[in-house]
Structures are given as structure tokens and as C-alpha cells.
Image 1 (cartoon, protein in one colour):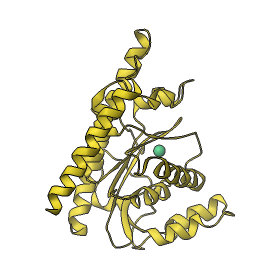
Image 2: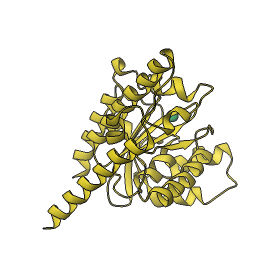
Image 3: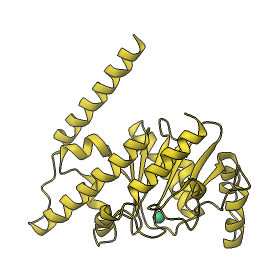
Image 4: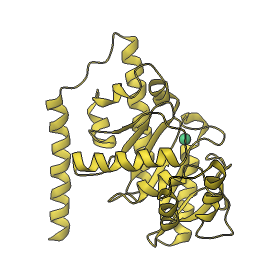
Length: 254
Ligand SMILES: [Zn+2]
């Protein structure tokens, strides 16, 4: 896909995630990104809004420059602010979002090309509760396993910026060692979800299904508490997906 086409698609994804009726993000909340495949990626600029995104609200950033910052541990708030500008692959672009580091790490997971992050009201209602991310450790509906993955990556609250990115980097490595593939969903307590997809449509689908999952959980708490699927049933759905995926891969090679 050309850079211009990716740019347009990222504008579209941003507006979909920012739609007021969906309650995923308001004002400057949330951000989106897409990998360009040349060591750089497009990410929402600081101070822009998802719902009114346009091409000039996206900045092109270099993965290598992000890595150089992540390798330093002695950075002040001002260093990070300056570092965000220094990460630009195109110096004429606006300062990228403070969550740029997180996007860069997610986009380099295998198979991930598009990333969306929101502050979804339903999901946050649970992540900001006394239960934190725990209700998402098990599933209540099969469709959420299909779209969001059987396991999600859970991250405790850390202020947005470099420290959060380092926790995400460690979390992604841990998740891949344990499950052999990257997560489709990261849940950051008291903050919000991240969706990792191979396409912009997948990112939107994950966010919409996650919102539904959270609303079902909230409803179930009002009706006596969730009746979680057994680990056995959840594993069967997950295995069926893996089999279908392998079959598709074999067919593609044949
Ligand atoms: Zn955020």
C-alpha cells in the first residue's frame, strides 16, 4: 500500500474510533498508528482529535529513533518532549502523541500493521474499578475469543510516556514467550485498551467487540456476577481458530 493510501485509511480509522456515538474516545483522547514498512510509521499528532482527524494530524516517526530514546533511562520530562520531536522521520510534521513509543513497540510485533488506542467508557469502567483488569482474565462469550483473542495483555497503571512504553515492551515479550504470538488486546488499568491488528478493519472490530465484552461484563455484575466460560470451552474455540488459520496458511502455500 502506498503511503498516501495508508494515510487516508488511518484518517478513516481514527474517525471511526472517534465517533461520538461509540463512546470510545472524546476530545484529544486515544490515538492510532500504521506501519509503513520502511522503518517508519504514521501516528496521531499531539493535540489532535480522533473524531476530526485529517491528514495533517498524522506524523511520520522513525522506529530506530524511538529505540534510541527507549535505551536511555535518565530522561527528564523535557528530554521526552524534545525526544518526541526528534523521533520524527519528517521534520515538517507535528510533534507526535506522547503514546508514540507504545505504538512503535506494538507495530513491530509479528503480523501487526495497525494499532488503535482508546479510552472506551465501558472498558474503563471495569479497568478503573476495584477489580481492575481481572474480569478480562476469563471469557463470557465465544465471539470475544474469536475477535479479541483468548488471552489479553494486562498492564497495571503507569503514567503515559516512556515508563509505560517500557512496561509494554516487557509485557509484549512476556506474552509472546508464554503464548507464542502477540496479543490482540492490551488493557492498561485506569487508562484504556490498545488493539493490535493486521488491518485497519481488524483494529476497529477488536475495539467494538471489546466494548461489547465490557458492557456484557458490567451487565452481568448487575445480575449476580459473570458466569465465565470454562477454560476447556475457551481453549476449544481458540484451538479451532488456530486450526482454521493453519489450514488457510497451507492452502495459501499450495
Ligand atoms: Zn491513552
